[in-house]
Length: 385
Image (tube, rainbow, N blue to C red; front, side, top):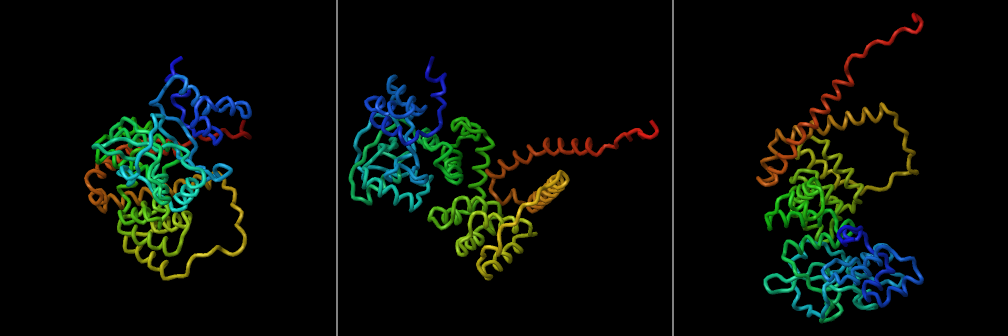
């Protein structure tokens, strides 16, 4: 059986911590681990790749364990590592061109610094060559932590890929776990604008649906650059920025300031956004944000949490009808107000395709309404029978 025909080729999960030994030392230590632990898919995959000499494959290593308690002794490793031959590289020679696509949380960086100081480097950096210079694909925190510790070299593997493939590999190394939604959006925009890849091509390269690509692209196109800068500086949580992106750009900066000054949680930010979207125009939203800024900081409501009432079918139906009416009215108002002209020609073309895709959906809804509301034939009277 070919490797590409098995579950190994499409394996996406991260290895548990016990497999770091196998990933780092190969078959020499794998039997010892197997004696005391049930062999996992991850460790089996590492062994199979080692047997077959697949130096170009991606070896799944331990990832972001500091978020979940990590190794029992506090060690932190990278997300995944390339299995190309490793060598020591000078940190001064490394470029960070792809760092613009990543966020660097201060707490995560500090955890990496402590791990590197106590345990040394657990996994190699992943690099590629662009215009004669080594660029980092994965390992930004390790490099910055090493520089903070005064180290001059780290172990790395260099992938033979171009810039586009390097960005695709960056997404694959962090698949479904390591990247925030905003980081994914930055990556998509880079492939779309800098490398001029179409959305279907990007979706195919990343193994995603084109609607997923479209949503990320619309997110970053709609989000004010100053709000994105707040996220990069660590002032605003990425998920809060995603909520802020639902507002028109004219209100996003003010709302981000409110979130930062009041220290609102993501959930509180989402509730404020919902309130603002129900208002008529940008001016009304600006006044609402100003009142929030002038008022007292929000606190927890007194008493315990109220028990949620059980909804009946008529409650769900009425709620769906109300939601459709509100969203339809809001969308109609935005289109009438020239929102397509305000987001730029590229984003407008994307939005137009999605709007045209709504037509068959709305037609199907209309047909469903006609069928559901059609006059019913009266049932025969049981007494008459």
